Amino acid sequence: MVAGARPNFMKIAPLMAAFVPDGDFEVILVHTGQHYDQNMSESFFRDLRIPAAHYRLEVGSATHAQQTAEIMKRIEPVLLQERIAAVVVVGDVNSTVAAALVAVKMGMAVIHAEAGLRSFDRTMPEEINRLVVDSISNLLLVTEESGRVNLLKEGRDPRHVVLVGNLMVDSLRRNLQEALDADTLQRLHIGPERFALITLHRPANVDDDAKLAEILSAVQAVSEDLPLYWPVHPRTRTKIAALGLGRGIHLLDPLAYRDFLHLQAKAAVILTDSGGIQEESTVLGTPCLTLRDNTERPVTVESGTNRLAGTSRSSILKAWQETRDTPKTGAIPPFWGGRAGDRCHQAIRDFFQIGSKA
Image (tube, rainbow, N blue to C red):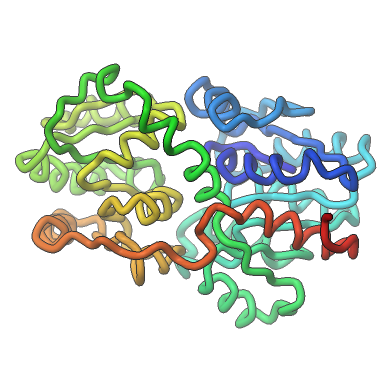
């Protein structure tokens, strides 16, 4: 099992919990180190009770090409050394595509958890990763019906496509009460009034000065209605300061998993460009404005609490007004009840023709 970036850890945790007790499998966990600081990595292992990784590749930050290549270079000796039957990859980050490419070229089975999601926007690096990994995977574990439909349209054998539900929701449900019991609001000096939570990380939003200024202009207008809190990456914080932006926004350091989950549950609204937060906010019933023109998780819009808000000042403020006037309550999608890890476990046993676990 391969993980490397913050969104991966919430998906790996329920897989590890399902497989470690199963004597029919030996599980080897590889942490690529794509995210490596305390609050982007180590706190997640602690909060999610993920066992220590057997291998830590420590690739660090780089361009997409350099990082992907470095992961490929460092994981190849691991796969050569161990007697690997299959490599399980999750999500759509560079660690996902790098590990899948090395494994398939070495003749190993590739299993992709969170397969089939499509934004149909090839300017997104994650979309390229999804397309590549799904095209070379032997078993495709799907979170929502749109993923199954997409894979069948792309010609994948339906016998190798299994709708299992959402691993991130497993982690959320297992940790929500502990998160809510924490003193997060007091430690972060967030008052009793209603507040909004913001996250931005996609290069198209944070690396383009004009786009970032447009988004923050809208967000600052929202701050006239309620306080805004943003756990922000240090590099983005520096850019905000250099551009003279961010007025009216409370900037926080990156947060550990449970602290961030606490804020998501308590927020009046979340503004984000994250795919995973679209899913988590839907399960929590928190209104969500996605600061993008598309989403690879359409169920969060069709039945959840999510609205696509775009990235222009006018479109964001329009979506905010709609949310303020008629907030979406939404419904929890099918198979998002906290048993996705068990379904993945059974699907992989079936793939190896081991059968049901007694």
